[in-house]
Length: 207
Image (tube, rainbow, N blue to C red):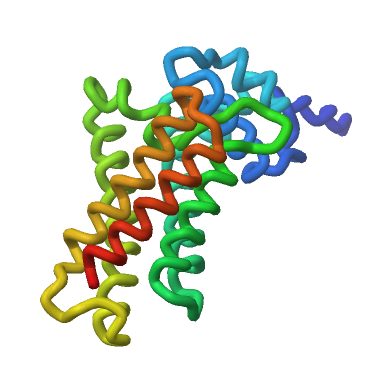
């Protein structure tokens, strides 16, 4: 009996790194925005042809939602790590802001701002799932700040009458300012001065 030759597989073999491909897609959305990014752009960035992109991640919207999830998870981990360090409250806040500025101003590249805020605000108007993920992401950052302020209560860094949830919103507001203004063209050094003043204001007001 003559054996049939194996049928060739269509598309790119699964020799790529899915996490790297997702990171490359995220960076493309980050630079160009969701609407300004085409499937051809994503294919060029990831090195995957369209059939392989669809097979691995689904359509463009599904890939963007995956990128949002990845960014939010990475942000949560970075904030928890920074705020868990054994250092005074003001230094903890500045550690978060410095990490954010490092991300918003990548070396040898134009200022990116925040991926979550920069790419999802316009899309959230007409896409309920994007709006929900944006809200969840912002809330997760609020929650991380709030846990640090509650710990500051227990350690006596701030008075018991101070409301951690309110302080968390203020701390997040500074983070949002850094994200928006970095994308709008403000210099990194000027934004760090804003962060320093904001952290001092929060700690002084809490005390």
